[in-house]
Image (cartoon, rainbow, N blue to C red; front, side, top):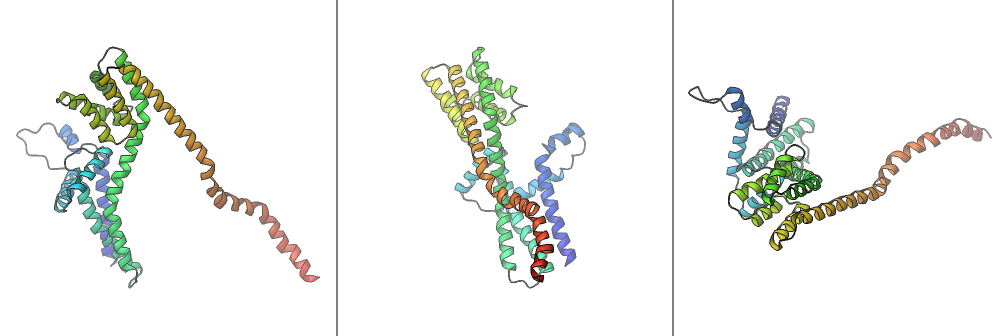
Amino acid sequence: MELALAAAVFVLVAGLTAVAGLRLWARPKAVIERLTGPVGDTAPTPPHPSLVFRDLLKRLGAVVPTPAKEAGRLERRLLRAGYRTPGAARVVNGARVLLAVLLPGAVYLAMQTLAPGSENLPVFVLAAAVMGYAAPGAWVDWRAKRRQHRIRRGLPDALDLLVICVESGLGLDQAIMQAAKEMEIAHRDISEEFALVGVEMKAGVRRADALRHLGERSGVDELKKLVAVLIQADRFGTSVAQSLRTHADFLRVQMRQKAEEQAAKLGVKLVFPIFFCILPTLFVVTVGPMAVRILREVLPMIANM
């Protein structure tokens, strides 16, 4: 039983490590091609283990029946998280299936080893299956929230750069492309979104539609407001630079107000840590010596009277 538990834990840890390596190692196929050189008449390069594991997840995800509505919702969540590859949804579904099988198996083996014959075994196994199935979706949502937060933080700088580009004589299309190029290092997420807008406009998509796609793809309210400002300025012929400058000032005021709101909530949030963590230690430090002295001196005197 110990051997089976060790094997299950090893498979689970190896799977999680492979997923983390796939995420943290950017473009392993490109790295392999750069190290090995262009493939000519030589023997084909064996696939990387991370690519094999991803293909396995894709095959598992292709087996899972997914409704069209749920598939569309998952695609939007993946786009907001920054995953645009065609098989990303199948990878998530495959990870759901894999974790929904491995995690209950590991919990079952652990319960059989630590508490054999427990009446709560079905409950723990079912909870592990639910957690394993929901974990990939929760991870995608977490990544999407982090990416949206980074976009919000870099949006005022992007607006200032757009204002500079427009006032220097560039058109809105060229200003967006130049902002995407200049912000590639400082704010990579906004740079990718602006670059996609430029690619869509080069492909023949109308500017208004490409900007609307920008707001829908990111899911950031501030970016949707920027899209509305740009569309209105383009439609009514107003000054784009003045509109961007006004909107950048509005975003900075809004961010300052949010920071002030968070600072105002800090006192309320500190009540519970102070009450449960700091006050007991203060009581121990201040009242503890006196209580010990009472127990050693006063109580024996009272007992002898």
